Image (cartoon, rainbow, N blue to C red; front, side, top):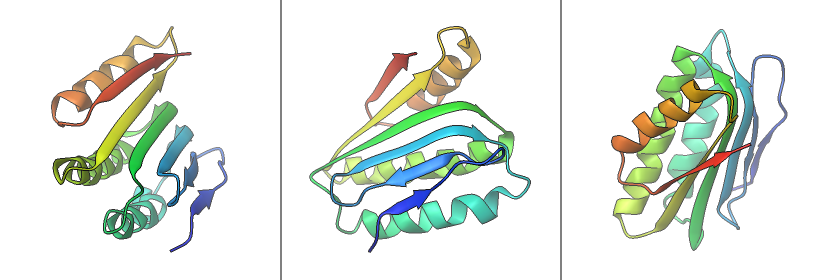
Length: 124
């Protein structure tokens, strides 16, 4: 299993999933016309990863904006990590948001209420 690295575009966020360190990062803007094409490989990578995860897993979400279809896949990613956490693994979500963007903070808070994962809220 290789690390997953995707460069950002005007529609897609950058992705860096490191299987050895357990550091996962999604950053930028996510407004793809077909979210399935972009997010399915991320979900598939995570399904494989959780079978043999790193000692600790940390997902850093540094999204400036995302559309509704991206939200669906992000929720799926969080649910996979939530199940990993429930199995006893150490998993953390770091939710970054612009101090001037209260909506992104609220979205992160809403997501955190549906999961048993620890969320860290980090202003930038």
